[in-house]
Image 1 (tube, rainbow, N blue to C red):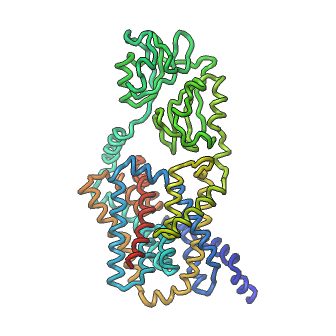
Image 2: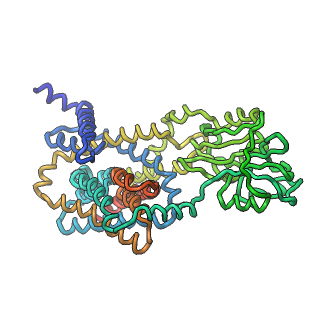
Amino acid sequence: MELFFNLFQNSYFALFVIIALGYMIGKIKFFGISLDVSAVIFVALVFGHFGVTIDPIIQDIGLVLFIFTIGIQAGPGFFDSLKQHGVKLASLAMILIVVAAIVTIACQYLCHFDSAIAAGLLAGALTSTPGLASATDQFGSLSSIGYGIAYPFGVIGVIIFLRLLPKFMRANIAKEEQLWESEAHSNTPLLVAQNFRITNENVNGKTLGNLRFRSMTDAVVSRVMHGVEAITPSPTTILYQGDLVRVVGTEESIEKVKLLIGQPIEQEIPLSGNYDVQSVLVTNKEVVSKTLAQLNLQSNYDATVTRIRRSGIDIKPSPASKIRFGDKLVVACSKDNMEQVFRLFGNDAKRLSDTDIFPIALGIVLGVLVGKFTFLGLTGGVLVVALVLSRLGKTGPILWTMSSASNLLLRELGLIFFLSVVGTQAGATLADTYSQYGYELFLAGAIITLLPMIITTLIAKLVYKTNLLTLLGALAGGMTSTPGLAAISPMTKSNAPQIAYATVYPIAMVFLVLVVKLLALFS
C-alpha cells in the first residue's frame, strides 16, 4: 500500500493515470452524452482532493501548446469569417459572450463569489477550455472549480435548448431550409462548367486577350477546341466561329459568356492526346502566399488554373488569388507541361502530414514575449501571435501552418496536460469551496448557460431576422459546443448550422479569452 501511495508522489505516474482514467470515463455516454476529454479534469479534481499533486511546469507546457495550436487552427477562419460573413454572425457571438459576462458579474456580486471561481463559471457555462486556460492564467487554479461545476450543465443545457428551440418557435424546418438555400446561392454562387459553340460573328478571328474575356465575363476558359484538337487557351488564343469552348464560372458568369460568344451546348469537348486536366496539391512552401499572376503559369507552362478548392469550398481563381499550403488546384495544360506544374506546386500528399517543430517553437517564443511585455498575458500573447502567424501563412522560408493531424495531436496533448494539473490543484480546495458556496455555484452556472442564449435568440430573430438553422449553428458556435452542433445536425439535411458554427466558433473562442482578461483587469 505504501509503495502504491509513493508511486502517486511521482508527477509523471500520477499524470498518466489521471489521463488514462479520464479518457475511459469520457467515453461513457449518459443519455447519449459523453464528457470526452473534459472528463480528465473531473478525475484530476478527485485525485487532487486526496492530496495528489503534479509539477506545475507541466501545466505551463500544456497551456502554451494548447493555446498556440488553437490559434493556428482558428486564424484563417477567424479573419475570413469577419471578412465574408460580416457583422451579423460576429456580433451575435459577441452579444452572447458579453451577456454571459454581465450575468457572471451579477452572480458574483449577489452571491459574493471569488473572482477566480466566477471566471471559471463563465468558461464552464460556455464549455470553453480556452476560456478556462485564460481564467487560470489570470486568477489561478481555483478557476477550475467553477469550470468543473458549470461545465456539465453547460454541455447538457446547450443540447436541450437547441433541440427544443424549433418547437418553442413553432418553426417549419423544411421552409427554413428553402430560405437558407436561396440566400446561400445568392451570396456564395457555385462554380459550374459549361461548353459553348462560338456563333457570334463579332468574335471570329479575335484573341481572348482582345475580347478581355476574363474581365468581361468573370469566367475562366479551360479548353478550346478548333477542328479536332483541344488546347489549353492563353490570352493569344484566337477564337473562330464553330470552335468549342469550355468555361468555368458562376451562373451569372455563364450568362455573360452567352452574350459574348454564343449558346451553350451539351456536346462534350474530348481531351486531345496531349491535353490533360489534373488536381494539383500545393505542398511546396516556395509558392505559398504568391498570387497566380506572380506564378505566371500561362507564359511559363501554358497552363490555366480553372478552380481552387480550399477547406472543401470551390473558389473562382483570379490573377490576384493567393496560394495557400494545402490548396487543391484544378489545372489544365499539356501532358508534357503537367509534370513541371506538379513540381512547381509540390503535389506531395505526404508533406501535408509532416510536422516542422521549428515554426511551433518560434511561434510560442514570440507569443510568450508579446504576452510578457503587453497586457495580454501568457494566453493572450500566444493566442494573438498564433492567429496573426496563421493568417500570414508564410514569412520568408518559414511556413506558419500545421497539418490537421499534427495540430490535433499537439492540441489534445497540451489540453490533457493542462487539465490534469489545474484539476489536481483545484481539487485540494474543492470541499472547502463547496461548503462555502453550496448549491449556489450550480445554479449560477445554469443561469450563465441559459440566459445568454435566450437573449441572443431574441435579438437574432427580432432585430437581425436570422434564419433559424443559421441561428442554431451560431448559438452552438457561440457556446463553443461541439456536442450542441452534433445535436442539431440530425434535425436538418442542410449544412447551414455547420457553416454558421464554423464562422462563429473562432470568433467566440478568441473573444471569450479576451473578455476573461478584461474581467481580471476590473476585478
